Each structure stands twice: as C-alpha cells, then as structure tokens.
Image: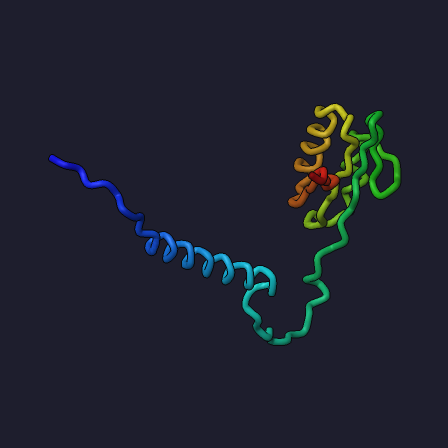
Length: 131
C-alpha cells in the first residue's frame, strides 16, 4: 500500500473551535466585569433585629497573651467574658504567625464549646512579586 503524503493541513475546524472558545471567554468576562446580570431589586423595610451583629475581635500575640476587644483575658476566663454575648455574633481571631498552634486550637475549642457559630481567622493578603 502506498501512503499519501499530506499536501496541506485543514485548519478550518481548528479556527472554528478557537472562535467558539473566544466567544465563551468574552461572554464570561463581560458578566464578571459588570457584576453579572443587572436587575432592579424590590424594596422592603429592613428589620433592625435581623441585622448582623458587629464582630468581636480576639487577638493573640506571639507570647500567647489574649485580648477580647482590647481587654486582656485568659483562656480559662474567656467563657465568663463571652457569657453575655449573643451566640450568633461573629468572632474574628487575629493571631500572630509565630504563635504555637496548640494555643489557637485551645481557643477554638473553648469558643465552640460556648456555642458560637461563626469563628474566622484574619490573615494578611500575600503580594506576588512582580516579574
């Protein structure tokens, strides 16, 4: 059998696929840039009781000292300090990066034992070096 050599390469299907992909990318980027589909939302009276409470901040420094909203506390006294706080109040933890992990885990367990539902860890955004 004799094999035929390719005289040319048909690139039309490749161009079709690339145009479809370009259309998808441009459509998606338009939705992302404009914030999605624009709608006018209906108005309703806000229930002041339904507003999210202001988050409380727990700070742990490198030495393991703990502050609740700038007031020094010990981990054992945390339950007494947070007793009067609503359990749906978000708690934000700002811990030093050199802190021993065990202290953070102990704090996490103490807060969860008290029944708080939202606990978040504040971090610093990393900046990528420019090329």
